[in-house]
Image (cartoon, rainbow, N blue to C red; front, side, top):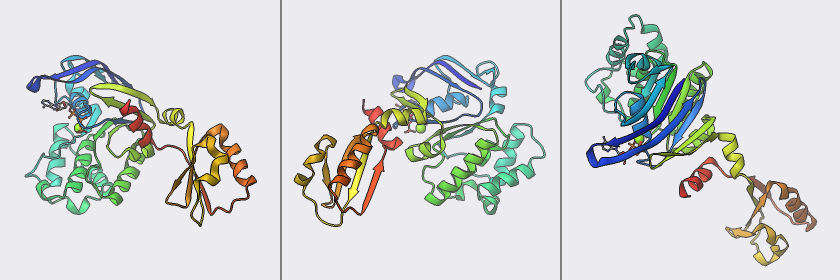
Length: 301
Ligand SMILES: Nc1ncnc2c1ncn2[C@@H]1O[C@H](COP(=O)(O)OP(=O)(O)OP(=O)(O)O)[C@@H](O)[C@H]1O
Ligand SMILES: [Mg+2]
């Protein structure tokens, strides 16, 4: 569906090598997160796919079309939600969406636009000028704009930055439905829990290179060998009383919570040792690392 081969990008201004030999194959129906720190090269890659930035080297094919030879065809296949919200300032939402439909030669698009505006809670704002929308509304407008031509692939560059938490969850539901109806989605975000919740594949880019590219579950399993066990008590604890658990790195949090680290295979042993002591605890929580912890770990190394 989307194929990026040996793509490199050097910006003339500053002689910055923003991408170094990027290779990425996205199959139809995937829901992929593209993660990375500020300046990692995510937007550069997306802008290349959108045809807004000319790559220095490599090739890109979208839906079987070579980006360099068939740019118009590739534009019909992808919808891009840019990170930068500064477009179409003087137009109203309706005008901008009509203009965008016209760009793709679509005439009677009103029913579909109505549907998209409704799903993005923008119906009430359709006569408002883009410059008068709030930051979060403008992001939703950009999603609507990226969808007017019903692209097979939707690429979103930080669509939820600055969007309030309730609306973010509304957007998650929207993206899940869009994915279920067959759209291939690539999502860039700094909210790692968003990627954990929505995406099936995690690609991490660092200093212009892909440093991880794995199915989410595999990535999480590989790093989840050690779970954190937290045992809550209703009285202050003394670390010396837990010497019998010394293999599991006991540690006391907030005076009343005992924390242990154990591999999956040792979990039952830990529980047995705890119960043999007849300790009166009030709660017991086993947590596997979140994608955020795993992400930080990968970035650090
Ligand atoms: N137009 C440009 N001219 C020169 N250098 C640029 C340009 N755009 C980006 N860069 C540089 O390329 C590198 C990658 O930037 P890019 O915007 O792709 O990062 P990003 O991963 O999207 O970061 P963020 O999370 O902050 O959006 C950075 O070092 C940036 O300074
Ligand atoms: Mg960016």
